[in-house]
Length: 93
Length: 299
Image (tube, rainbow over all chains, first blue to last red):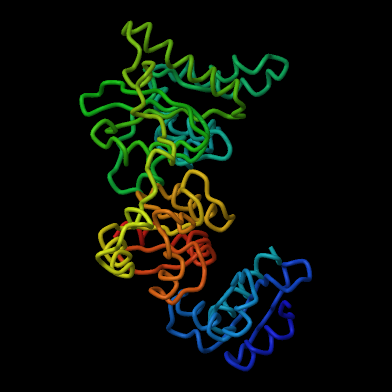
């Protein structure tokens, strides 16, 4: 039972071609809950809700066994770049 | 001091007040300092001298820094909440709400004065015309209570009356607890035959109410951390929302499965605005942090 972090990653990678992807198992190892940070061009021009839907759709099979999926970040490459830059200027200051 | 007078403004009083404003200077501080216009020579030296009297107990310091109620200049309350938050400090302190005739309605203590005033403005706009604000530095409970007492006593000495909002039993100014509003039920009970499909009931409900939250548990006692967070966000935005408990098998039987299909969204909570799904906990949290929610609820 349960889903591995690798399974989640490979499904997201093949479906959404992310520029940045970070999957964290937050269930403590049983594979029931994950948090995801994902940056993909496919999010361009889509509302947050639609972006989350894309992620959920990509994980359709896995979702049957996942209890909780927390999508922390679902950004376009452009937004991601901006955030990285602002984070950098913050840490420099 | 002399160079400051030249550099800052033409009025010596102004330079005095701005140099004595407390760090961090909130927007309200200059206005408050002007309140001491009546007897600046007395009030201002007191202000700058007090921090050095460290051996003294705290309460005299508070009463020295805090202006009397009568000396404090009322600030009018704007209808626009964005402007309101800019006009009032989000610091701790006392505030005195006045109605259109300038009558004192209520004296309150707050950890976030601007937010409290915004809340009153929403619930009783007709009574919130202007507010006097006194920011309390080092706002522990004793200092805040002391500040509140001094304003209350001043008003009662002057008028012989308790402000109507502070009379016991008056709940106009008290934030109503969330549990006051019941959760909505979609059906009259699971043994009753539905005349309309559940989808249609959901559709009606989300279109008839501006904001609807489908949560696990009741709004007063959410049974899931994500639902709780969503309720917390809605409460702190001061939104008037309806809630539906998707775990209620008696009155919302079958709702979970039907709603998931209706929205094509796999999890709860689900928050609707104007009949449209906004999202669940992650989306609401993220929009809340970016400050995107207030405009969504305002429309």
